[in-house]
Length: 125
Image (tube, rainbow, N blue to C red):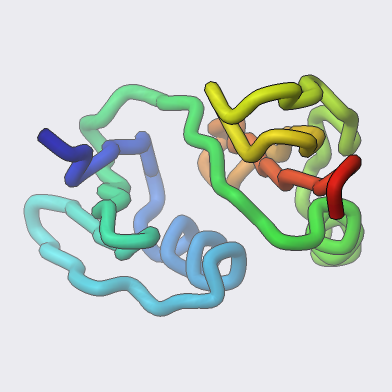
């Protein structure tokens, strides 16, 4: 099995399309209106933005967490939680050994929380 799709609530699909196009640096892969379904491809997983979907907490990996958060702040995006280290990977159970996992949380255009994640190498670089 593999994950193929995640649904996220979006009341205004045009507003959500603009927000996620900028965040993901990608254009939507499909829009079906009606019934109100907007799709993005995120690393081979479909992100479905839909009026009828519940709010979900999605996490997106970014290369430069601090830079991404600064750019989003400059665009007027609400930052819920500033970048902070949440975990050090001593082994490779949940991430690369000898790395730190950093997260920040933002609010999307539809008032959903989105997690942004970066993994930073520590020892053994």
